[in-house]
Amino acid sequence: MRPSAVRLLNILVPVKRAVDFAVKIRVNPQQTGIDLNVKHSMNPFDEIAVEEAVRLRERLKDAVKSIKVVTIGPPKAAETLRTALAMGADSAIHVEIPEDAPSPEPLAVAKTLRELIARQKEGVDLVIMGKQAIDDDAGQTGQMLAGIMDCAQATFASKVEVDVQGKVANVTREIDGGMEELKCRLPVVITTDLRLNEPRYASLPNIMKAKKKPIEKLTPADLGVDLTPRLETLQVAEPPKRVASVDELLARLKEAGITAKQA
Amino acid sequence: MNRLLLRTSTIARAFSRSYATAASPHALVFLEHYRGKLDSSSLSALTAASQLGGQVTGLIVGAPEELPIVLEQAMKVKGLDTVLHASSGQYSTPLPELVTPLFEKLLSEHFPSFTHVVSAHSSSAKSILPRVAAKLDLPAISDVTSVQHDLSSSSTTFTRPIYAGNAISTVRASESIPIKFFTVRSTAFPAAPPGEAEAKTESLDPVQVSDPATEHVRTILTKSDRPDLGVASRVVSGGRALKNAETFRATLDPLADALGAAVGASRAAVDAGYADNSLQVGQTGKVVAPELYMAIGISGAIQHLAGMKDSKLIVAINKDPDAPIFQVADVGLVADLFDAVPEMVEKLKQ
Image (cartoon, rainbow over all chains, first blue to last red):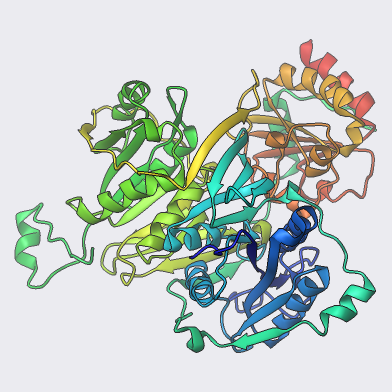
């Protein structure tokens, strides 16, 4: 992707509408998926991404030229975009897919985003997105996007600082056993981890303002992308239940050498 | 990359074919290492790769000083036919931007071709594999808990957790996907043990990246003499009830020491500053499946359970009899942990 010509930042935040994290999910009787007739909301890691973009603007002020959010989803996904606009994004893009269409796979999402980015006249300097969606827990989209754009990537970010003049992002990321600091040349794809920030609740005035912010509607065909899944889901099942008899339990406790005091 | 291989390993097979048959799998396993030791999680990835049936080739990258020691170990691990290795100063911290070109070259040029690319679901490998897959216009499957390859249809079927492990998805990658990329949940596959035969080794030229877009500044690892949380067979984990960082350590360390256990923490405890984030167990922290998991003062939020519910024996100590943790615990103790834990430590020492 082309970074902006002038030293201003254009930020793109892809967001996903997913089953709300507090919902107790149930596998459907046919074992083809889960019961989706439940509350949905913005993927929590994407909320963190929107929040980070808004905080970057609060820190860098006019240096952040635009914050655009985008989602690939059914008509209802527009609600998710409105939430992001209420949090402080400027405009939104809705790549609309049919209500009953399967959720696009990470590679298809990455390709869609690449096409969108290519169409942004002013370029995109930062893509900030959640490290994983809490429905599929795939955690691949950011890396795939960075791969097909052949640009820098910083996954599991816990701290982001942007040097606009130097066109560099200093990112601290969470890794197994500790943390890592990276210096990434813009444009960069950053995926957010839990501790990056705590997202704000949109205030009522901001929710009202958000209703007037523009949402551009597109279809995958407009972008020339095919969202057909390439992997087949054969079954979705409940995890195996724990089974233990009392005798087995006591024996295992004894084996592990643990004594417990009854309250 | 869409070449189909004709295997002529036995005469009988050759005669039975009159058309191109499915290729026997050839897996490339990314073997990671730290301070001269192969990562146990990579050895779990190797076990998964071996279950595909067929050839297994390992790949090790690193700085020139560190490679020989790691190579020595890799050669002796069970299940590897060949170990490929590439050394370069650029590989001392294998950033995705620096390592991807080597993968691309290897996957397009190596003969016999690879049908699968496998790694642990480590923070480093899961940052690399999807990047490589996407560059080859291929999907990837994350965090698999089982793998099965069907030779006749050249398809591989995986299971993997979704919705924080509240459901298990069975996914198939058919022959339409010529190279199947997947990362492996290390607690689902035992680490490959030392083997009898020594693997062949083959040196690869590194693919240097001129002017990389990303620069590694530094890595800060939390030091610990305790077993590493990700591979420990016993884990003692604390929650928000532990009051503060000092009390967390003072209460749990003696118990962990008495059991030879690693220390873990719930997200609430980490967020409250009682423990470092590298100790976090849960959907967004570490997934562990030790022989013994003790949840001390942990209520049992869904996201925490996702990180430890495959543990063989779950013991919970909590003052609240309605805490959700008791639904998954094998042994539950409703008690004040500040009484129960010291008593346990005393009795264990006897």
